[in-house]
Length: 238
Image 1 (tube, rainbow, N blue to C red):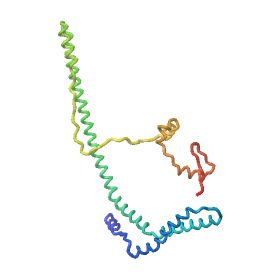
Image 2 (image 1 turned 60 degrees about the vertical axis):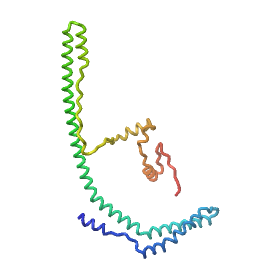
Image 3 (image 1 turned 120 degrees about the vertical axis):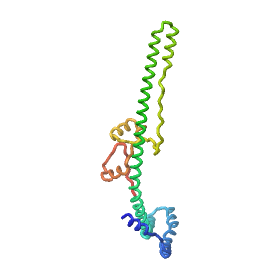
Image 4 (image 1 turned 45 degrees about the vertical axis):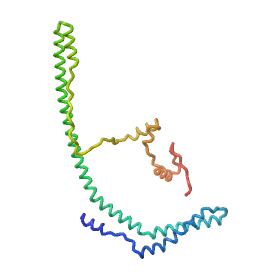
């Protein structure tokens, strides 16, 4: 099935033949040459009904010419179909491979994280042993200090006890097979709480809210009586 699709897409060609090029030039060039004359109409003012009617005729001619160009350039639709076919072919191959690649990467990352967890646990275990060893050494020195009658000797053992520090255990992490990085992701959003915070402190939170102006326009179009606090509607003629 995949090989058939590859043959189908690769077999598609999009070459404009010389006859078609000449045909396009013959039909589109005269329309393109009208642009400057159409542009000059913008400088004309409307003072009478005849002026308005004449400019309306020009506006209609422009619309007709634009429609002619769109209808004539069927190559655009063909190019779109070809592009869509190539993208579909690419995605049929890339998407399953990408899913497999990401799954493999995830397996390696999970393994690396587990190895790191084991190292950290072992480091804590060995560190606890060193802490206990240091505690016992300090305790022994403090007991000796208590047994000393001479103040100088007692101070000597006390100083030794204060100097006892546990060995700091550092186990080197293994080399990462797959390089990783950390980034924050949004896990969930309580929209009501966020809206409340934005209303109380808009300088900080309002930037996190996105207003759907198209939805507002559609709602107003459906109900001209609609009024929403904080939203100003304006009716325009187009």
